[in-house]
Image 1 (cartoon, rainbow, N blue to C red):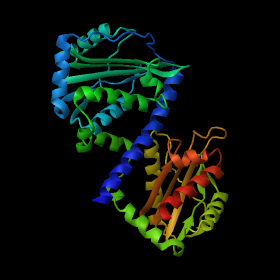
Image 2: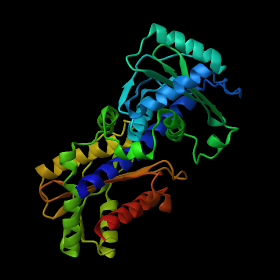
Image 3: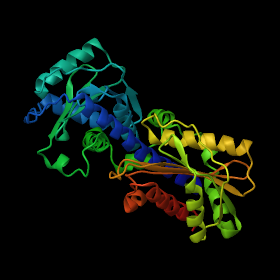
Image 4: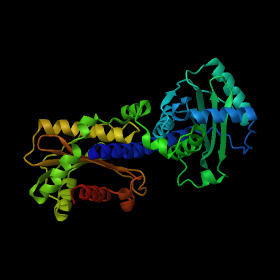
Length: 387
């Protein structure tokens, strides 16, 4: 049971970091297209007694409330992956009945929330929802300032306004964010909406993975839990073997399209110096073809892991374990890169599948801008498993 909980926590952490990478790509894409932006700072609409009653009713439903998330607009354009993350965060807070709409609401150039609510009400009238409530949100900004505004509305299925929210870069909520990116904006939106839905720490602790988790799992490229569950025990076995275990190190794939022959010798030397096991550089090079095209870095990682596992099974090595690394770096820009590596046992089964990018502490501690920096991160991660 303990291992199952640890696996679930690890999966959630890996998913979170992976989504930050996806959002980084989306943000770059939107910047490249130019922004649709509503920068005018306006007061929040007055809450009428009728709306207050609707808010209280929604809160009283708690986790039983059902909500449709309309496509979240990022810089003026709807992005389904942002909607999925908002749904996932609400599910993690305990909301059980969530639907994702594929029909996008276009607010045009409207900046006044009251008039925007009216347009949204008309939209729901023409595009009925099957749930009790609908959530519409947009994250706006400019090329120069980046993301700096959140506008959000929750309406009931009749089109009546239940909740509105408007945050700008002048307010402390956005100013206090460590980074202004879709991930942090999604978290902020859900934090503010949760109290209106009656979601809290208690409901979050009792939350169970549901439809949103299934969508994220499919997006992530994660293998079935049955294939991931044995990894902790295999890692324990490798750790206990220590320097008695032999590890065949293949030259790393660098930049996704070439192999660096010297890296096998360099990594083996570093691993031996750290006395983690008996590392041996492979005599032959191996260029895996796993794609890096998907913006979800976790999907890239597991694609590599599957290909290397297949290779290790078909080509048994004369060693207890085999290691393959995927290194990407940008000279002068340490944030743009990652370190992936996979260790399989003699049977070709996964033992370690690991990734690091700029959102991880070990990566930040080294800030790699070269192959050598990436190798240092790999060693540090391997030490974490085998010390």
